[in-house]
Length: 267
Image (cartoon, rainbow, N blue to C red; front, side, top):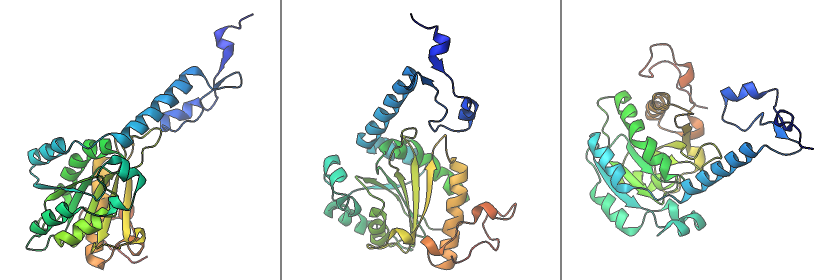
């Protein structure tokens, strides 16, 4: 005999907590199993994450959006010739190909840029295309007006460390990578920000600062831009980035939008 539907699905008493997070909590059950809608939602999220990893970067769309926002840009490619090599050989994604090295050598700026921004596909081109340009616009509003900013670099088949060679080739004092993060099962479009002072090939992850989870359901453009500019100013003041530079932006004095409070210190 079939039981009434109301007794088949048993709701979790913590279900009200789901309004505060997209994590898979308080899902309820049907007998000893997950409910059908939960299983289908998981399958959809898994497919979206896989698609995000393999989706190619729409370079033309990014270039067009940058141009409309008033940014000059230059395109580079890593030593990974295609996505298959990129996923199997992370080392190739950390270095430029020969054509890109030559292109950046011609883009070497004078005066020395205070910062160069890189929009990179990483493991989610969707994140880079969706959030890269709007985030840059928010950052530009907060940067010191006397800072020299290099043309934005669009990088394909890129890992985080590719920014070190980009910054070194251009001669920038700092490099900021805006790169698609590894997709999660509820965040296929999460953007990560990596800041490195005095970039050069061979820098380690300990010499970078990271701001993650930039997306509609995570860190907003304004919040991310505030934290990034705070760190950029701090790195310029201290002459370093990474573990030696603390992110005290959350404790900045009210109204201290330019980050000049006594909050920058060595770790």
